[in-house]
Image (cartoon, rainbow, N blue to C red; front, side, top):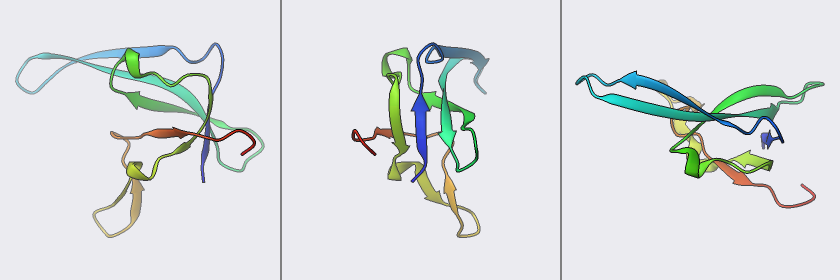
Length: 92
């Protein structure tokens, strides 16, 4: 399990404006979290979200199973376009 923490004062939603292939404006939203990968300190990661209304509240999460996929050469990958988190239970 990979634990991801959303911490106070770094839970803002960031917006990126772009143009689609057909010339229409599109917005991408993300927020930052910290992944605990077993090193001395967690690392900062970008989490895609659908809109500011779907931001993750401050707390601890794990990467949802739906975020994993089988890659081109049958290897396990995280789908970075559909990265979802699930809330960790207290004490985990």
